[in-house]
Length: 281
Image (cartoon, rainbow, N blue to C red):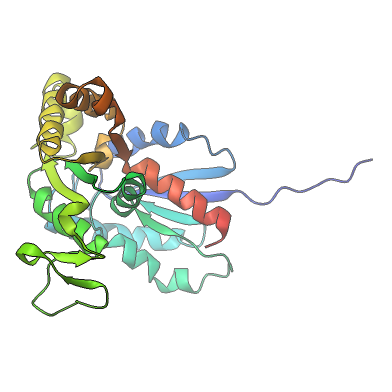
Protein backbone atom coordinates (compact mmCIF):
# COMPACT_ATOMS: atom_id res chain seq x y z
CA UNK A 1 0.00 0.00 0.00
CA UNK A 2 1.48 3.31 -1.06
CA UNK A 3 2.09 5.76 1.78
CA UNK A 4 -0.29 8.71 2.05
CA UNK A 5 1.43 11.97 1.23
CA UNK A 6 -0.24 14.90 2.91
CA UNK A 7 -0.47 18.08 0.88
CA UNK A 8 0.84 21.28 2.45
CA UNK A 9 -1.85 23.65 3.66
CA UNK A 10 -3.03 25.96 0.87
CA UNK A 11 -1.94 29.55 0.65
CA UNK A 12 -4.69 32.01 1.47
CA UNK A 13 -4.84 35.60 0.22
CA UNK A 14 -7.37 38.00 1.72
CA UNK A 15 -8.45 40.50 -0.95
CA UNK A 16 -9.67 43.64 0.79
CA UNK A 17 -12.17 46.03 -0.77
CA UNK A 18 -12.09 48.84 1.80
CA UNK A 19 -15.31 50.48 0.64
CA UNK A 20 -18.74 49.16 1.65
CA UNK A 21 -20.07 48.36 -1.83
CA UNK A 22 -20.46 44.59 -2.06
CA UNK A 23 -20.99 44.63 -5.83
CA UNK A 24 -17.48 46.04 -6.32
CA UNK A 25 -16.06 43.13 -4.35
CA UNK A 26 -18.09 40.67 -6.42
CA UNK A 27 -16.68 42.21 -9.60
CA UNK A 28 -13.15 41.30 -8.46
CA UNK A 29 -13.89 37.60 -8.02
CA UNK A 30 -13.93 36.54 -11.71
CA UNK A 31 -10.81 38.63 -12.38
CA UNK A 32 -8.89 36.77 -9.68
CA UNK A 33 -10.34 33.38 -10.57
CA UNK A 34 -9.26 33.78 -14.20
CA UNK A 35 -5.62 33.96 -13.08
CA UNK A 36 -5.84 30.24 -12.24
CA UNK A 37 -3.82 29.73 -9.08
CA UNK A 38 -5.50 26.47 -7.94
CA UNK A 39 -3.23 25.97 -4.93
CA UNK A 40 -4.16 29.34 -3.45
CA UNK A 41 -7.38 30.20 -1.68
CA UNK A 42 -8.72 33.69 -2.33
CA UNK A 43 -11.00 35.15 0.32
CA UNK A 44 -12.76 38.48 -0.13
CA UNK A 45 -13.49 41.23 2.40
CA UNK A 46 -15.85 44.18 1.94
CA UNK A 47 -15.68 47.20 4.21
CA UNK A 48 -18.34 47.48 6.95
CA UNK A 49 -21.37 49.79 6.57
CA UNK A 50 -19.42 52.55 8.33
CA UNK A 51 -16.93 52.57 5.45
CA UNK A 52 -17.66 54.92 2.52
CA UNK A 53 -19.55 53.31 -0.39
CA UNK A 54 -16.99 54.84 -2.75
CA UNK A 55 -13.46 56.07 -2.06
CA UNK A 56 -13.11 59.33 -3.94
CA UNK A 57 -10.61 61.52 -2.10
CA UNK A 58 -8.25 61.77 0.88
CA UNK A 59 -11.02 61.99 3.52
CA UNK A 60 -12.75 58.84 2.23
CA UNK A 61 -9.40 57.05 2.02
CA UNK A 62 -8.79 57.82 5.70
CA UNK A 63 -12.37 56.96 6.69
CA UNK A 64 -12.20 53.58 4.95
CA UNK A 65 -8.99 52.66 6.75
CA UNK A 66 -10.41 53.62 10.15
CA UNK A 67 -13.61 51.66 9.49
CA UNK A 68 -11.91 48.51 8.17
CA UNK A 69 -8.89 47.99 10.42
CA UNK A 70 -10.81 46.81 13.54
CA UNK A 71 -12.64 44.22 11.39
CA UNK A 72 -9.43 43.08 9.70
CA UNK A 73 -7.33 42.58 12.81
CA UNK A 74 -9.06 39.28 13.82
CA UNK A 75 -8.31 37.96 10.31
CA UNK A 76 -4.57 38.65 10.29
CA UNK A 77 -3.64 35.30 11.78
CA UNK A 78 -5.78 33.26 9.39
CA UNK A 79 -4.40 34.31 6.00
CA UNK A 80 -1.02 34.08 4.28
CA UNK A 81 -1.11 37.50 2.62
CA UNK A 82 -3.25 40.59 2.17
CA UNK A 83 -4.16 42.59 -0.93
CA UNK A 84 -5.63 46.08 -0.52
CA UNK A 85 -7.82 46.64 -3.58
CA UNK A 86 -8.05 50.42 -3.55
CA UNK A 87 -5.95 52.22 -6.16
CA UNK A 88 -4.33 54.77 -3.89
CA UNK A 89 -1.50 55.13 -1.40
CA UNK A 90 -3.92 53.49 1.03
CA UNK A 91 -2.98 53.62 4.74
CA UNK A 92 -4.22 50.06 5.30
CA UNK A 93 -1.05 48.77 3.61
CA UNK A 94 1.40 50.19 6.20
CA UNK A 95 -1.13 49.74 9.02
CA UNK A 96 -1.50 46.01 8.39
CA UNK A 97 2.24 45.57 7.83
CA UNK A 98 3.01 47.15 11.20
CA UNK A 99 0.14 45.65 13.18
CA UNK A 100 1.44 43.87 16.30
CA UNK A 101 -0.77 40.84 15.55
CA UNK A 102 0.95 40.37 12.21
CA UNK A 103 4.42 41.03 13.55
CA UNK A 104 3.90 38.53 16.39
CA UNK A 105 2.29 35.86 14.20
CA UNK A 106 3.20 32.32 15.25
CA UNK A 107 3.90 31.51 11.61
CA UNK A 108 7.55 31.85 10.67
CA UNK A 109 6.64 32.64 7.06
CA UNK A 110 6.40 36.32 6.14
CA UNK A 111 2.97 37.66 5.22
CA UNK A 112 3.07 40.03 2.25
CA UNK A 113 0.78 43.07 2.26
CA UNK A 114 0.39 44.68 -1.17
CA UNK A 115 -1.63 47.60 -2.51
CA UNK A 116 -2.82 47.56 -6.11
CA UNK A 117 -1.29 50.95 -6.91
CA UNK A 118 2.19 49.87 -5.90
CA UNK A 119 1.81 46.50 -7.65
CA UNK A 120 0.67 48.03 -10.92
CA UNK A 121 3.42 50.64 -10.98
CA UNK A 122 6.02 47.93 -10.38
CA UNK A 123 4.57 45.78 -13.15
CA UNK A 124 4.42 48.73 -15.57
CA UNK A 125 8.05 49.64 -14.92
CA UNK A 126 9.12 46.09 -15.72
CA UNK A 127 7.65 46.42 -19.22
CA UNK A 128 9.24 49.73 -20.20
CA UNK A 129 12.06 49.99 -22.72
CA UNK A 130 14.49 52.93 -22.48
CA UNK A 131 12.71 56.17 -23.29
CA UNK A 132 9.21 54.77 -22.70
CA UNK A 133 6.79 56.00 -20.04
CA UNK A 134 3.76 54.71 -18.17
CA UNK A 135 0.70 56.53 -16.92
CA UNK A 136 -2.51 55.97 -14.98
CA UNK A 137 -6.14 56.29 -16.07
CA UNK A 138 -8.42 56.69 -13.05
CA UNK A 139 -11.88 57.87 -12.01
CA UNK A 140 -12.71 61.24 -10.35
CA UNK A 141 -10.59 64.33 -11.00
CA UNK A 142 -9.30 64.43 -7.40
CA UNK A 143 -7.19 61.36 -8.23
CA UNK A 144 -5.02 63.33 -10.64
CA UNK A 145 -3.35 65.01 -7.68
CA UNK A 146 -3.59 62.14 -5.17
CA UNK A 147 -2.22 59.49 -7.50
CA UNK A 148 0.26 61.84 -9.15
CA UNK A 149 1.87 62.42 -5.78
CA UNK A 150 1.39 58.83 -4.59
CA UNK A 151 3.12 57.34 -7.63
CA UNK A 152 5.99 59.82 -7.44
CA UNK A 153 6.47 59.09 -3.75
CA UNK A 154 6.57 55.38 -4.53
CA UNK A 155 9.12 56.03 -7.29
CA UNK A 156 11.15 58.23 -4.95
CA UNK A 157 10.84 61.20 -7.30
CA UNK A 158 8.28 63.33 -5.46
CA UNK A 159 9.57 66.93 -5.21
CA UNK A 160 10.71 67.87 -1.71
CA UNK A 161 11.87 71.01 -0.02
CA UNK A 162 15.19 72.15 -1.46
CA UNK A 163 17.99 69.95 -0.26
CA UNK A 164 15.65 67.56 1.52
CA UNK A 165 15.79 63.91 0.58
CA UNK A 166 18.58 64.29 -1.98
CA UNK A 167 20.98 61.48 -1.42
CA UNK A 168 23.60 59.66 -3.40
CA UNK A 169 22.54 59.20 -7.02
CA UNK A 170 19.69 61.72 -6.71
CA UNK A 171 19.86 65.35 -7.71
CA UNK A 172 17.69 68.11 -9.13
CA UNK A 173 17.05 68.05 -12.86
CA UNK A 174 15.68 70.75 -15.12
CA UNK A 175 12.67 72.51 -13.63
CA UNK A 176 13.47 71.17 -10.17
CA UNK A 177 12.46 67.57 -10.90
CA UNK A 178 14.33 64.92 -8.96
CA UNK A 179 16.63 62.81 -11.10
CA UNK A 180 17.82 59.28 -10.47
CA UNK A 181 20.62 57.97 -12.63
CA UNK A 182 20.15 60.87 -15.06
CA UNK A 183 16.39 60.30 -15.63
CA UNK A 184 13.84 62.82 -14.40
CA UNK A 185 10.54 61.60 -13.01
CA UNK A 186 8.77 62.48 -16.28
CA UNK A 187 11.09 60.15 -18.18
CA UNK A 188 9.17 57.25 -16.64
CA UNK A 189 5.84 58.62 -15.40
CA UNK A 190 3.46 60.47 -17.75
CA UNK A 191 0.98 61.31 -15.01
CA UNK A 192 -2.71 60.63 -14.40
CA UNK A 193 -5.83 61.29 -16.46
CA UNK A 194 -9.37 60.69 -15.22
CA UNK A 195 -12.86 59.85 -16.44
CA UNK A 196 -14.67 62.23 -14.09
CA UNK A 197 -16.74 59.33 -12.74
CA UNK A 198 -16.49 57.99 -9.20
CA UNK A 199 -15.78 54.29 -8.70
CA UNK A 200 -19.41 53.34 -8.05
CA UNK A 201 -20.53 55.38 -11.06
CA UNK A 202 -18.49 53.12 -13.32
CA UNK A 203 -21.16 50.49 -12.75
CA UNK A 204 -24.29 52.68 -12.43
CA UNK A 205 -23.74 55.08 -15.34
CA UNK A 206 -24.92 53.95 -18.80
CA UNK A 207 -22.30 51.69 -20.37
CA UNK A 208 -21.82 53.84 -23.47
CA UNK A 209 -21.11 56.91 -21.32
CA UNK A 210 -18.52 55.06 -19.23
CA UNK A 211 -16.86 53.66 -22.36
CA UNK A 212 -16.68 57.13 -23.93
CA UNK A 213 -15.18 58.66 -20.76
CA UNK A 214 -12.56 55.90 -20.54
CA UNK A 215 -11.75 56.36 -24.23
CA UNK A 216 -11.25 60.11 -23.79
CA UNK A 217 -9.04 59.69 -20.69
CA UNK A 218 -6.84 57.10 -22.43
CA UNK A 219 -6.35 59.31 -25.50
CA UNK A 220 -5.51 62.30 -23.30
CA UNK A 221 -2.81 60.25 -21.58
CA UNK A 222 -1.39 58.92 -24.86
CA UNK A 223 -1.18 62.47 -26.22
CA UNK A 224 1.50 63.23 -23.61
CA UNK A 225 3.88 61.10 -25.64
CA UNK A 226 6.00 57.97 -25.28
CA UNK A 227 3.33 56.21 -23.18
CA UNK A 228 3.92 52.47 -23.55
CA UNK A 229 2.03 51.19 -20.48
CA UNK A 230 -1.27 52.23 -18.92
CA UNK A 231 -2.32 51.31 -15.39
CA UNK A 232 -6.04 50.96 -14.67
CA UNK A 233 -6.26 53.33 -11.71
CA UNK A 234 -9.28 51.89 -9.92
CA UNK A 235 -10.25 48.40 -8.79
CA UNK A 236 -13.66 49.15 -10.29
CA UNK A 237 -12.04 49.35 -13.74
CA UNK A 238 -11.25 45.63 -13.68
CA UNK A 239 -12.44 44.12 -16.95
CA UNK A 240 -12.26 47.38 -18.91
CA UNK A 241 -9.04 46.39 -20.68
CA UNK A 242 -10.82 46.06 -24.03
CA UNK A 243 -12.04 49.67 -23.92
CA UNK A 244 -8.53 50.89 -23.12
CA UNK A 245 -7.09 48.81 -25.97
CA UNK A 246 -9.66 50.19 -28.42
CA UNK A 247 -8.71 53.74 -27.48
CA UNK A 248 -5.01 52.95 -27.93
CA UNK A 249 -5.63 51.54 -31.41
CA UNK A 250 -7.80 54.51 -32.39
CA UNK A 251 -5.13 56.96 -31.22
CA UNK A 252 -1.96 55.19 -32.36
CA UNK A 253 -3.01 52.73 -35.05
CA UNK A 254 -3.34 48.97 -35.00
CA UNK A 255 0.34 48.11 -34.63
CA UNK A 256 1.53 50.71 -32.14
CA UNK A 257 -1.75 50.78 -30.21
CA UNK A 258 -1.68 47.00 -29.94
CA UNK A 259 1.74 47.17 -28.27
CA UNK A 260 0.67 49.41 -25.37
CA UNK A 261 0.72 47.33 -22.18
CA UNK A 262 -2.44 47.53 -20.05
CA UNK A 263 -1.85 46.80 -16.37
CA UNK A 264 -4.72 45.75 -14.11
CA UNK A 265 -3.69 46.54 -10.54
CA UNK A 266 -5.65 43.64 -9.02
CA UNK A 267 -4.01 41.13 -11.35
CA UNK A 268 -0.59 42.68 -10.75
CA UNK A 269 -1.04 42.47 -6.98
CA UNK A 270 -2.27 38.86 -7.03
CA UNK A 271 0.69 37.82 -9.17
CA UNK A 272 3.12 39.77 -6.97
CA UNK A 273 1.82 38.16 -3.78
CA UNK A 274 1.81 34.71 -5.35
CA UNK A 275 5.46 35.11 -6.29
CA UNK A 276 6.41 36.40 -2.85
CA UNK A 277 4.65 33.51 -1.11
CA UNK A 278 6.33 30.93 -3.31
CA UNK A 279 9.71 32.53 -2.67
CA UNK A 280 9.05 32.80 1.05
CA UNK A 281 9.87 36.52 1.15
